[in-house]
Amino acid sequence: MAVRQVTAARPLRPIDVNPSQRTAVIAYVALGANLGDAAQTVRDALTALGRTPGIRLVQASSLYRTAPIDSSGPDYINAVAEVATTLSAPDLLTALQAMENGAGRERPYRNAPRTLDLDLLLYGSARIDSPALTVPHPRMWERAFVLMPLHEMAPGLVSDEMLNAVSGQAIQRM
Image (cartoon, rainbow, N blue to C red):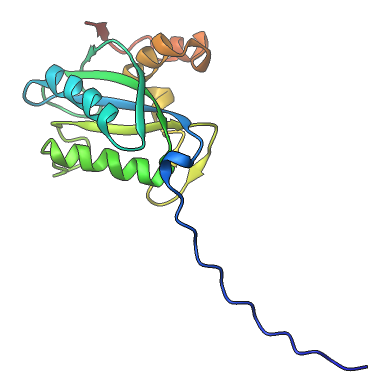
């Protein structure tokens, strides 16, 4: 019996897929700011989200005022946006971080006051646990400033039990 030598196949070259040809994923992004004109910064960030290639703003919650948690400084203005995106989760995170940087975000220490904070809360039904990204966002279930605006837009994602768990956190719809 003759033995045929098998050579390793050449690795396939990745195919560049035009993001507009990908199926859109529904994702939720938390927005917050407590430096400068925080309300205007959040509104501007919502507009910028909708103008970012590969992202379409579906809807945005009302703005909410909350006291800082595990931090100091002025009250935060928060909101949540629902987006349809053809970006991968890591690429969406990169886009969000670029927006933060464009708004002058600095990270001198954990939970420092912020000109703009954008967190990827949910990315479709994905569960991601990497050094750079965790989805669902690991602390979203502990924060009224996330759950209240998310419940406003997508009540099926936030149970009454979840809302009761954060009911002691002061939050004011603007």
